[in-house]
Image (tube, rainbow, N blue to C red; front, top):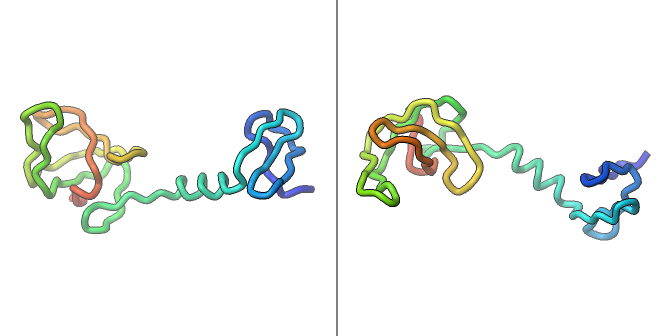
Length: 114
């Protein structure tokens, strides 16, 4: 049996490699052979706080810098404790609710694990 992956579009097992691409002869779909490596790296993404501690869903964190809230005159003050964070993909990798401000997203570089 071949160790090549099945086509992500039609699930055909008859894929073949052509340089840096995998090609499906049944649906003519082409995708990069490095796509599996990139997907594996994204699956293993580890989010760390400003000190280097690993963050997980449900952790409590403390803000280490005054943060202006875009689009308003509110400021998240240093020492504000945020409970029950959720980790998300993107530039801002923490989704949370802050008392008095509401739902917002934070960057992990501006918090430390409580």
